[in-house]
Image 1: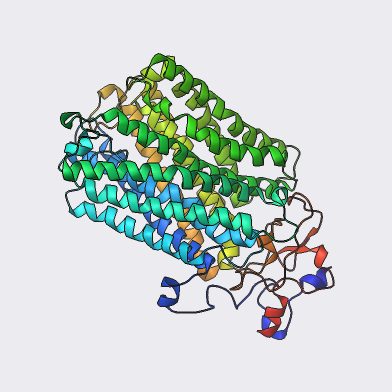
Image 2: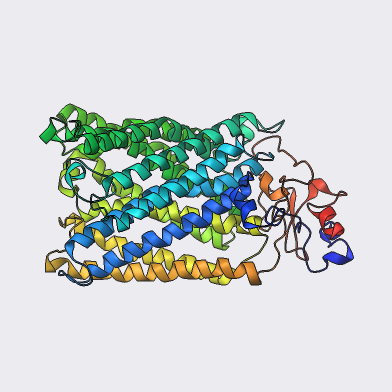
Length: 573
């Protein structure tokens, strides 16, 4: 069997079988070839680097906020600039990082290869979505030199209709970004329907595809509601039509209904792809088939449907009727059931598994811990009796970051570390990757656990000044922020340095069983040199994979007697 993994040809002595020199990265060189590319892999990589850049920009705003809150008085910025900082932090993180993070970057790269396809269904639409994303991002950030924005990322009326800050450019940017999301979701839905290979039915698909499919449904159905709402806000500001502003005869609560009818499903645009990534990594690093495949698949669709029914729990104190509050509270508790199904099935998969504590698995374990805390603390906010007390306090800030930023971005970085060898054909330093992941997890919990305590004591959010009694909690939270920043810097250094110093990656370094690991690392331009082997049942079986120490990766025993992925390419070079 070792011979199957031997290096082929005299020109390939320094590269493992499965590493392709003729890959999508250097298929066509030059900056223009990237700008106009229709290759889903290149578009996914461009999305990924853009999102990571915006993540560090949003993190910079957060670090400035936390530094300002070291003492109860003004430290580095005044109240007006503070309001702009938390607005830009929220807007950048939500619209430019978390919403597009996994679907636009990781799914764009991986999804067609998981299907054994050459590309997405609509490559030109895919490229258009990326450039709409870039235009929207640049327009939003241009408002920094147009007076800034201080409404908060929710653009709540009537303040957003009366403030003199740059509301229209940022709202227009969010409108454009919505179209980018719609194009991406539509593309993925059609791709999964139409480009599955022969033999891959709905219940042969990897769970990542189920999660992205459910996300696409939300993107296509919910995002137009946000677009219309933002368009109405622009019309009101420009033409002074009374829609939301009570001074013009409008209803500001109507804006909240419209906004949260989109934004609560949007919560699942953020978290469903994260769950999808975790569902891929748990069986791979537990060396076991996923427990309850169909339950996890159906739970993705259930979450997408429930997400449209619970927007009112954001408005318990906004004047809703008591009956509506009770209905929304009950539905909020119901949506936790399919989420819990996923968590318990992940834990059951790991139970008695041969767990490999590689860097991606460290992100998985951190995700499960943080998502569990986020979900459990959500019960307090879904309950009428406790939400009234906790509303608009730091408890909400901590809960939102545990469910959205913490869970989603731990999964995003876990996915980046998981698919990095496939994307760039290089292995990173496992030791420092693990250290970086652990530091991020420690820093995250140190940042937001004190905020749960502050919020339960009634400390309001979004204030530059606070009572001296909360200073120890703010200082602990600020220290945690800097710890987390150190962890992310280490992770960035580990990944970037691997491009220059990392050893060449084999086709399947983790022993994963889905189709993207059957092509070379990096993939060739058309994704496969030879047709992939489609599993006849659920995709998470590992009996056909065997570790080859000389290769430094896993080989597929089903291909015994035939060249390993990339062998022909290696021989040619």
